[in-house]
Image (cartoon, rainbow, N blue to C red; front, side, top):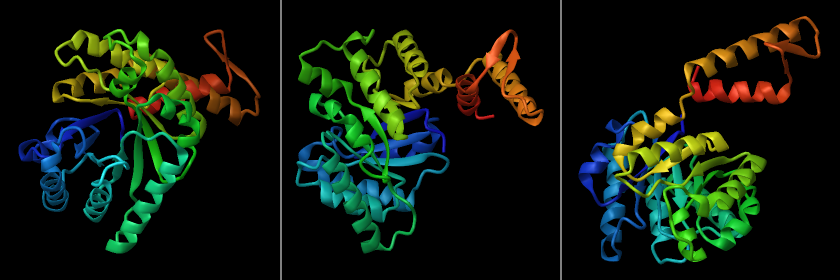
Length: 284
């Protein structure tokens, strides 16, 4: 499953749920939290559960963002979406490793209760200063955790920072979360670009996410999906270079050489890993 784009969709909008597989995102996130008013929580949960069972989108990863662990809704959300066989459960406002363990236990309990044999993994959102301080402990807490999304809107609000298209106010948060995810071996998912009409700004922001090393990026508009997908596809000259690096490394290994050069550059392990990432992003 590719994971360049994670598209948020309101869980109480039947039209958008039905069109999920046509929008080009690698993963769709049916949202039961911020996009749904308190009085509509139960109806939205039932709608998403029905959509997953009866109208399940094909060719995309399925995630449901449930309500937070500090709400009265999350346990019913968890059982409903696990029973409906979501691929991922996304949980917001995670601040401690213990909360990840609580999520993992709830997923496994729901799988047993409903006889779900398919794997269900967790994605969590880190969006507070405390969560960022604990991000490595969160990232390494459980094998059920697949990745972490940076929630920049809540984070900057908590910091008293102004959210900008340039993103200087979240530079540290991005680096801290990204480093923790890489150290723990889980997906690092960049925050959505919130200025929906600023497509040029979106493209710069997505290019920065790729440059930094994020594995994917969340988006809040279907109009953003294609541009973010495109940002994660390397240019053809980079793909050609990566192929040459891997061919040179393979030849050196066959000949028993410890090192080899290409175009005057020594091909060592970091260069090989960079080439592997380019080919992974290119899906070749």
